[in-house]
Length: 394
Image: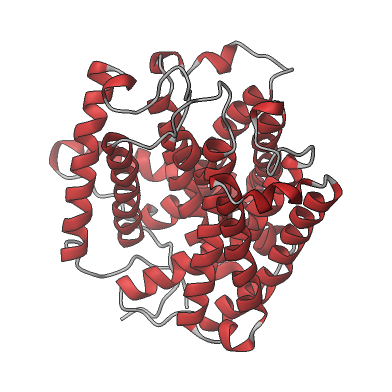
C-alpha cells in the first residue's frame, strides 16, 4: 500500500460538532485579544499561568513527540517496515507544534512581542532554549512535509484562465524543491530528532529552576531526563492512537502488524520512564509526601497508576494484537503524560503561595478545546488532499 489522498466525504456529523466547538473557542479567543487575559482567564498575580501553558504548550509538546520518534525509527534506525506511519506522525507533529506555538502567542500578555527571542538572545535562559528550538523545529517539520506537497502537485498544476501563465513556473519550482530536498532531507530529519530531544528536556530544566516553588513530589534535578523519557514513552502510543482514530473515521482497516510492533516497543520505553521516576522518588525520600493524601499526593498517585496500568497492558500479547486494547492502552499513556504535565505546571507549581486553588475558566477551556477541534479538522482536510496515509486505493 502506498500513501494516497483519502477519498471520503469531508462534512460528517462529527465534523459539524468540531466546527461548533472551534467557533465557540474562536469567540473567547477574540475576547482575549480585545479585552486581555483577565477578561477570559482565571489567571491573577498568584497564578501566572494555567491551562494554556500546562496543557496547550507543555502537554502539546510532549504529545507531538510521535514526529521525532517515528523519524528516528524509520529514517535513522532504518526500520523500513515502519515507514508507513512516518508521514501521519509527521503531520500530527507539524499540526501539534503549530498549535503549541499559537498557544504561546495566545497566553503571553504582550502577544505582539512573540518575535523577540529571534533577535534578543539569552544563552543562559532555559526558556530561550525552549523557544528557539521550537521555532526552528516547526520550520523543520514544514520542510519535511514539503516532499508530500511536491508529490501531490508535480505534473498536476492547472491554474485556469488568467493564471495559466504560472502553471509551468510553479511546476518547475515544485520539481526543483523535490530534487533539492531528496538530497538534503537527511539533514532536516537528523536536526528534527536533535532539536526535539533538546527542547523536550529543557522544559524540565525550566521547572528545575523553579526550586522550592515546586512541590517536592515533582521537584527533582532529573526533571529534564524525566521530561525527555516521558516524551519518548508517549511517542509510539500517540502514533497508535492517531492511526486507529483515522482508521475508524475513514472506515479503513487498521495496520495491526505495524501498530502491534509499536506496542511491543512502547512497553520498555514506559518501563524505563517509570523506573527513573519511582527510583528518583525513593532516592530523594520524597515518598513521605504521598501518605499526606492531599490534592498533590492524589494527583501524583493517579499519574503513576495510569502509567503503570498502561505499562502492564502493553506487556500483554492480547493487547498488542487487539486494536481495541491497543487504543485503550495508548489512551492511558496519553492521559498519564497529559496529567504529568498538568501536575508539573499547574498542581505542583505554586510560586506565590496562592491562598485559593486555581481552576481554569470557561474561556480557557473553550479556547483549548476549540484549538484541538481546529487541529482535528485540519488533519482531516490535509489527509484528504495530500498522500499522507497508506491505504488500499479503490
